[in-house]
Image (cartoon, rainbow, N blue to C red; front, side, top):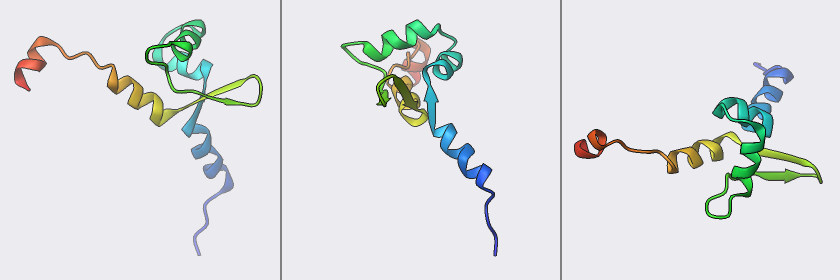
Length: 80
């Protein structure tokens, strides 16, 4: 019988959800800018409030949100 160590399960869960600080590091932006992106009226960064003061972003939702905003250069557009 093969079992997974509990630590591995916890790491997988932690990687799925990111704090605002982790998103800021990943995007190389100040945390204040990430909060503004979350509050953006037109196309907000998907975020989930956990409790009264905690905000988390799902890594998959962040990737999808970034993919929707991908800028295609003219050279790339000509190839398509």
